[in-house]
Image 1 (cartoon, rainbow, N blue to C red):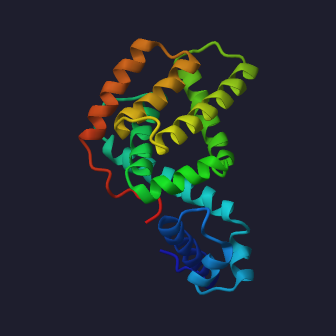
Image 2 (tube, one colour):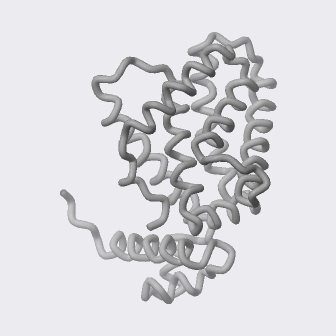
Length: 218
């Protein structure tokens, strides 16, 4: 394994400090100066690697998504073949479980959902994933309709997440995860029968495997 350079080690130290502060203090209460002080770096050095607080968000969630995908890849070895929608359903079960079960992570996620810090990251990723849904189910959706559905889905996810974090939606995280991805599937016209089948299989798969190694912050 290649040895990290001094600059790379500094960047990782800053990144880990930011995650620790976001976890303990929340996103809104954490300042750039606090991250610099906590990581024992100058403000100039910190902003060289991470220009703003939002710069951390893309890295945090990219790492989170990668860890879920890698875990699923291992756990799906020997499992039956699944399409992109089924895999995304399984991923969504893990995604929300570790965002909404820990109160401190939940608070962090709620704060960034309020100021849309996560939108730039999710928009590109969701577009790629949903295009695969269209191919798998041969859905007749024009490009202009696809873009509108993508916006509608993101808005629904954001509002539902806010409602859950504010205790306006009272249900187990597992049920909430199924609600979120099932709503997406209905928006894009995936057959209801397929949604019911995949939701049941995804729930059994999630309950039958340990994903405790996956963390968002610390």
